[in-house]
Image 1 (cartoon, rainbow, N blue to C red):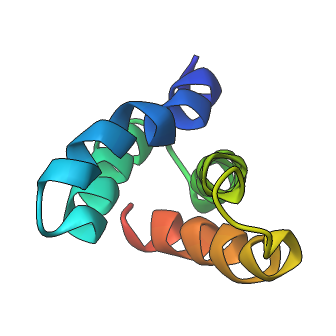
Image 2 (cartoon, helix red, strand yellow):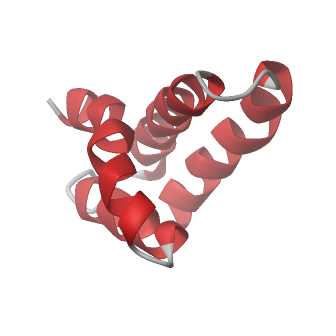
Length: 85
């Protein structure tokens, strides 16, 4: 169930991020609320990767730098999810 939340979360946050002037804080706070429920760094890293991949799919609809986003943001979200435990 948490995997589904992490896959859908960037789509739900996208509208909030358009309004608020600090979208990174909103994104990390929402990710922390979901990652807080897992035990261990491996599930947290996996959930972060799901979040990063889902966010890449969302933002790739607007840009054409798919590989750069995949290589940079997906591992970043995985590592920050580990840090949030």
